[in-house]
Image (cartoon, rainbow, N blue to C red; front, side, top):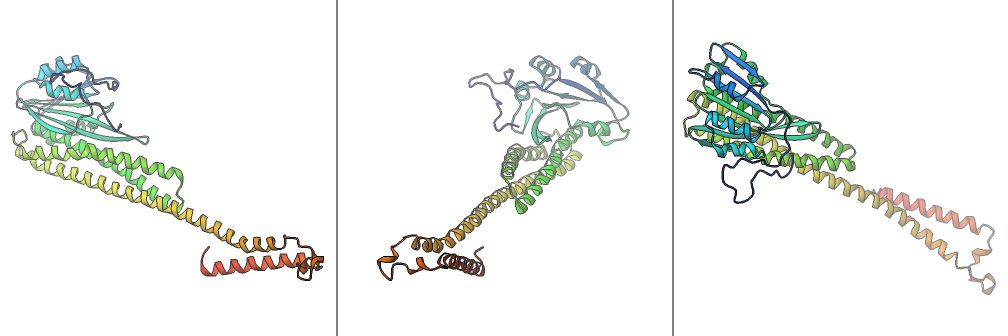
Length: 357
């Protein structure tokens, strides 16, 4: 997940222009069709756009799920088949868009972001969602999609999805995307706890690197998930009547989940900021402890250096009676050593008593 994604055309480009954004392709583009009524469901994989159109009919709902970013030709074919607006198709092609909600020609178009964590690398994929009168089109920019639980519910006879309209299916997809943040935040929460333990027991240089990595990922999460709350709020307002009244109840729960995700992100960010301060304080304390020990050692050697300096002046003993008479003593050398040892021990005891080390 990069800090800055190119999601724009050169200035002056005509609105709705479909052109590649410079992103690397995300592997094979896979089209999966779900065509269902309350009594039956048809699931087909690796279909074409023409196959999707053949299955459309009265009293049926079509769900076309696309994994990977389609090329311009395929995107235009899908747009012509379902009457999708070129501005929406442009946003689909240019991944890295800000989450938003738009209405085009009686169709609802939403962009959402869902994070996934893989081997200490955070990916932030884009979901482009179209809601029409009898169809739902979901386009996932990543190499995988999170909608397998929705397929499992769709297979069950009597499930709520099969007995409600396409608006409820759109809600189920939105709810799945919003909930994708919880496992990621749980993993990041475990990382926060591990770093806290390291900070208390034995902070190392790599601890600082882990703190900066965590702080960066949480910042990026906040940047992409914060506008998602506005999307939930827009769906709840239901100004264009795309969502039925019975679906709004479930959307309120989805809105609560998005608020909870943001609260967790903010809490983790504050904790990581506090951990950075704790790390810097620990480093400063360790430096102070080291300086204290060095200061004690230097202080002990100050009087010893004075004694050695005095007896290293080598005055001539024959010059007078006060010219360092200790130089002629038989026990002068051991006596000086004894005095220096006594002074050093006495200073150590005094420092220990004062709690300096």
